[in-house]
Every structure is written in structure tokens, then in C-alpha cells.
Image (tube, rainbow, N blue to C red):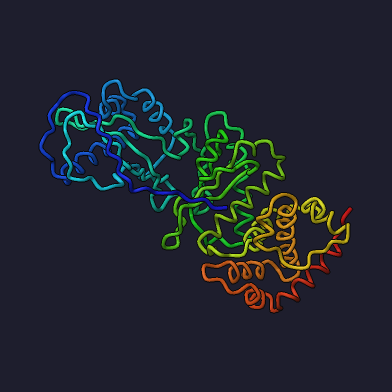
Length: 399
């Protein structure tokens, strides 16, 4: 699944006249903007340098120094190539008197070393104060990044020409499992999909449900073990791509954990060639095929809801629709299992290269119509595919 971020351009000016000072002459907007950006640059540098005195100095006396020191320490275990807060809104040429506090929209731009070719952008707010011709920060709002929640602990490895970073927190039960599974998962993915996809891989093990929800950008994340997210695709690069695991995934048995990881890695690998309107049965079915590929899981265990329906004589009469996959309860569960079973059937009958070809034709940036994609990849029409899939389903052992 993919996740996105919302940007705001609202500049809220909060005028807190803390003393009976007379307003000063207006400062040119360009000078004010430059001064505030210089303050943000010092703040960014102090967070990364570990210089506590420099960090304290950018805030007003009695400000959030202790919380910011924790943030600085949380960041110390993460390697970044870019880390900078920048203004995200225009600064008007209004009077800026001493003791005026402004709340400004800003953006954090950061790039994890070895992973992010393009800096990731995250929205935030800061409070600034003009005091005796000097600018200081009053506060800095939270950002949806792992180090906002706890110290960042990274595990780095090199697999061929690909840098792999597992990012967790102290005592994480999930991060070591990801580090142990990732090599085999990437090898299997390259065998199926091919090696020509984004070089860097960032896996994040969230420590709490709140962190997981913040990082994936969703409100309803109950029951979700992991999600592959990205901000956008830009010139063939998936910007801000991460595979994020919920803390509840620690309870998954090894085989299920492996399936989830490989499923989400497929979404990450296929991100730059997957269109916004790709049919979900193809997107999710092929991802699940990659997740279960080579596992030897019996059909009745891989698709228990579908197996029960088949045992009761209820054989699907169409490829699962987006509505089926978006329905609540067992209908959705069965639809996902059907999507996997179609992909499994195609791979067994036509070969994996044809399944990859079907995905590229049918789920691409400019996809062919579903029936056309099936004809292009498999040489049969959709009705024939459904009949053959039904026959294959009828031959599955259900006990």
C-alpha cells in the first residue's frame, strides 16, 4: 500500500506583545526571510553536529532545550547526506517588532545516506521570536520521522550494488528479524522481478502503533503488519520510499513474517512502473505471489477462505474487482486470496516471465485495458483466463 504527505502553505502570524513596546519600522521581507532561514540552518546543523551549546543557543532562554537535546541524541545514530529545515511559506513585509512571535510553516528536507537519491520532505512548524535584533526559535513542531519517537538505531549492509538500511530503536524485536531476512528476500525478488530497480532499501521497525500510523500517513492502521510507502515518483525514482513494519509484526511466525516482508518489497520494487489506476487484483496478487514464492505453502493454508468457498461449491466467476478487494470482512479476505491464486495459476501455467509481463502491461503507468493486457501477455482473452483459472482451482487439494 502506499502512503502520501500533505503540505500546507499557510503562514500564521501570532502577535504576542509581551511588553508595551512600540512597533519598529517594517523590515524588508527579503531580509527577514534570510534571517529566519539562517536561524533554521543553524538549528539544522546543531541537531546533526551533536553540539549541545549550539543547539541551546538557537532557542530562547527557558525554551524547549531539553526536548531538543533528546531529539539531537535520537538523531546521532543515523547517517544522512542532507538534513535541513527550510521555510515553506512567504514572509510578508509586515512590521516585525521586538517580542513578536511568529508561527511559520517550514519543511524538513533529509536524505538517508545510501538510500535517498532525492531528499525527502516533511512538513513542520516553528515558532520564531525577534528579540533585540536577533532571531531565536521558541519551539519546533513534531515531524513524522522515526527519530521523533525514539533513538534511531541503524543496521547497514551491502548486497551487490544495493545499500540496505534497517532502522529501528533500542530493544526492537522487529529490526533484528528484518536484518536477518532481507538478504534472502532481495535475492528472491531479483530472481522473479529482475535486479533493475531502486538501488537503496530502507526498512523501518516502528516501536509503537502511534509511530507506525505517523510514518505510513494513515489513521486506520489496525491489523496492518507492514506497509510500503513513498511520497511520489520523480524521474524514475521513488522519493521517500520506505517499508515500515508495525510493532505487532513481532508476533508473526517466521513464515508469515517472511511473506509480509517479501510482499511489501515487491510493492517497493514495482513502485516506479505501477500506475495510479492499476487493477488491485494484479497489484496485490502479484505482490502476494512474490511473498509466497518458493515457500511450499499448501493451497488450503495460503488461501483458507477461498478453499472453504471451493469446498462448498462456490467457484469465483470473475477476476476480483477493486470493490471486492475494498470490501470489509471475509469478502475482502477471499478477494485477496483469489488475486494471489490467479497470479499463482499464471506463473505455474505460463511461467514467471509471463506473469511479470502481465503486470507490466496491465498495471503500468499507462496500462493496457485489462482484457488487452491479458491478450498481450498470455495470448488468451480474459474469459478464457477465467475459465482456465476456475478449472485450476477445481483441481486444488482442499483438505
